[in-house]
Image (cartoon, rainbow, N blue to C red; front, side, top):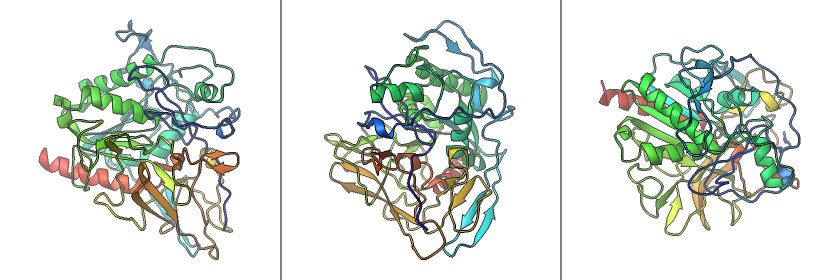
Length: 433
């Protein structure tokens, strides 16, 4: 069964859109994020006026108080207020406390339901910063979660709840509309706040978490795109080589470009945090960007690009030691703008996720000036299962080699990422009884 490729409903990442080392970004994928250098993107791939998000559950008005201590930021966000968290244990309207069941679709078209169960007694924590998804009509978003923030937490984060307690702050990110205006050369959106607000929020949420919730627990720090830009900045400035590095179980930095010296596992972006090489290794970083084998990155594509004497990190979650993974544990979304997506002839999928064992393979490859996770489709046109579960960023009706499979970074090996975190959690617990 052939499936038409289309752009998905989550925000895509940009990158540095301002001077200095600050990261601001946006993306229009399943909920995306930020990178060090923004690729050139045609206005044709940018989403047209999105449908207004459907209200899910009213959230209390977040509170922002206290004069800013960060240059350019007009206010600080109070993270003792539960409403300022997208996901946090014990809060109402927790975006990670949702149905995550998946329909497993085999090559012969047979299906089964895989139930999901969170672990409220998980031994470690996860701290997540989401990608560029906000549909707020200003340059910086507010702190009230819309459907777009709720959906990206469900798509990229909530499955980690089987291995860790989840903390995901709302933050005043560079909005999708502002990104679209910036990249297309169209009319600017009204200014609200400054780009420094996003960094101040992430820093303040992290500081509040450490002071009030961590209590010596290990923590995985993860993000995608704009969120990856923010956690990269956070780790480099507040964790790398500092006392809190001892708490780092791992960093998962998706849809961004982390650099290490060629033929080395440490150095570059982070001076003291090595690349993960096995699921039992802790205190390390996992990072990758995905492209199709049939649409490799363009020469100027920023995701996975090497820079001078350093190269981009690519760690395949399904094969951390290297080599090809013949069956990464992919979870494809069937909700939000992907609701009603067809994965098998004659059957509708009733769960929010679909799994397609054996349909894709993934391997970190070095080609030209890029190091990235290459995804190959193993389709059989004669069976009833979809031939292509992937979602490309499109430009002029074709997959854009500047963006690759940015929309799928978190989906291609989501199950493997969760498994790795589970193994790391067990190792952490043994070392910290």
